[in-house]
Length: 503
Image (cartoon, rainbow, N blue to C red; front, side):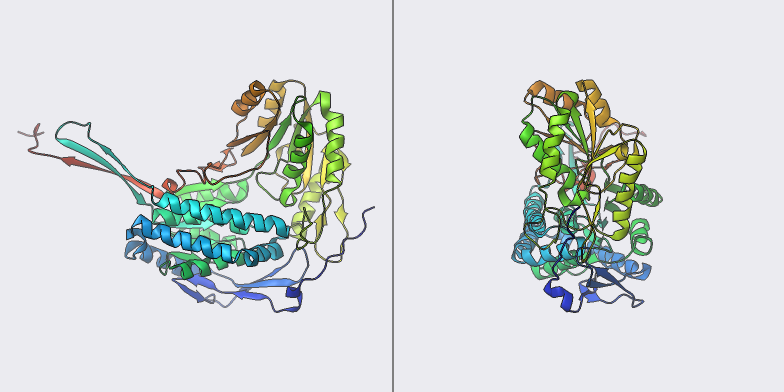
């Protein structure tokens, strides 16, 4: 029996919650109907933030501001070097406020503080990378169409972009979208999750300080029905960039279809790590624990399925179990913590329900599986489920919690069948000393990213996105700014036009 967790109350618990206003047209304003949202820290239990709660009227004002800033404002007409300078200044300011932003994300999401600092540091790198791409965005010319014709292809900013982000990586995910849209010359309306909005409002403060013109970025806190839906359907919005669940992604795509908006979506995942007998098993075991339990498993890229060769399954899983027992679960503000609090009590119940259903279906809890008693917040013991079959819900559906399902294989063909036997295709991992094995798996898995002898590493230079129901399009990479543009073809004719159609 685990001893109850003793969670220390931070200084914020004795202070008034931080209050945030909407950012519309360069001004911090109250919601038009005066409503607000309170957010309690999932790791500590006290109210940590209060946001003005936007309504459809606020969405209208924000979209109109973004549209005006795009149509007549300076941002789309600036030199790329000028836009890049603003993004670089923003990156510097984010770095200056890194500790503050990380703490906000911890208090609102329950993630460990050391992890949050790493995420904000990674976001700084992304903003700088986006700034570099602003200056490399270019079109094409075609002088091979005959002596009398020159073709030019321009890339122009697409217009107003609605950006909708989830609660699990509040600052990092908006940083995978917003700076690239800005680098292209777009304007934006941003809706963070109603549970983790604070750090996104800080981005708004930073961008204004960095010199971003009024109206270019507008930030609204609120719920999907009141804010997200009108942001998607608004006729002045030209593109929607959404990260969240596949279920909500489908409704977002349907809502955008009325006006045939461009839609980019990064959705759910049910990602497998495939381990062969010739792998570095010590490294693979550590990666299995990391992949399953990082961010309390509340991660679209989580390696939530461990697909192990039968010849090593027992010994390997004993090693994974031993490592999982060393994972420190507890106070998110403790630098030693590896797994923090679950985002909400309702979500913890949902995750625990998957564990119960797996046992009913014939699976067995090999490690963990229990809610952890604590004086504050909600915590779940990292869990490993054995005897999982491909048809079980826990093998096919995104659990989004610290739960690792184990399946076994005898041949590479079966390993690939298991890996591909889900509606998702976001990422996968393969562990083997054989380059032939690694290449066969990497080519055979239907996913947007395959890690070979490593797991869940990311770089701004590499595109990220999924196959199947894991999304549409890609984020990051050298073409990330192009995603927020339209192509325009211009044909120049030189000299007298011949070959008249009439006469």
